[in-house]
Length: 275
Image (tube, rainbow, N blue to C red; front, side, top):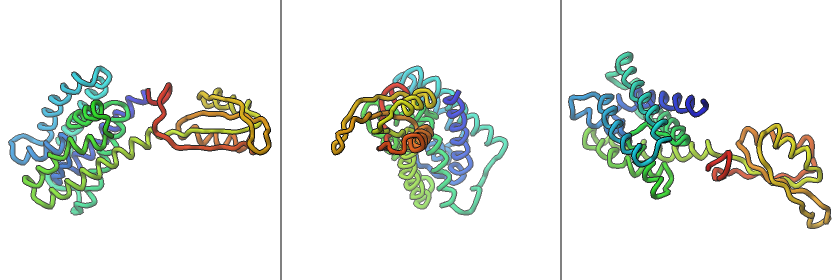
């Protein structure tokens, strides 16, 4: 259910960012929505219709190469995204930008879709389009998803120079670069966990709190202090950030003499993390 609601909210957020801020301004910093903006200028079809057709074609490619789980989540996200844009097009037609501040609108045109795309990528899904190309590049070349998206979208962004002019083209290039950076940062932030190394005399209450209250695992082993030669216990554990703050506060309260080393990491592989 968490994945379902996250993908649902991300798809709607993406649709708002694209329809309200990207389409009216002609920003084309990649993606099928960016390609749709360019093609809508030279074809008799609306950007929303072009977005739907191209998305369906690329989604079929993704289903073939990325598997069933990708297909289920991405089909849902793509359909919701394209339907949301079509509904907004009918309910709230926009013939001009929302404001007269293109830089302000560029910020929202970057931030909303980038955050939404990062959430979708985190759950191995996408809204179709060049996101499928980026996921394929990441799978077979192991480059970061933001960099893969930059490669996939660069030609589309350049096309804005020829269709909408130099000013819009420059905005599109800035948007493309910023979007790629934001996506990588957001994904890393979502996946960030904390790794604990705790040296203490009385490990039982700490281990009990980790395993029973926080529902996490831990590894313990005996150690010896280098100066005092006193026998100590070392506890190793990793967990998501909300639980990490609870563990830190618990240890400081129950074992004030314990020595804690807390490291931030986004690359923990195993049960409960990346598998």
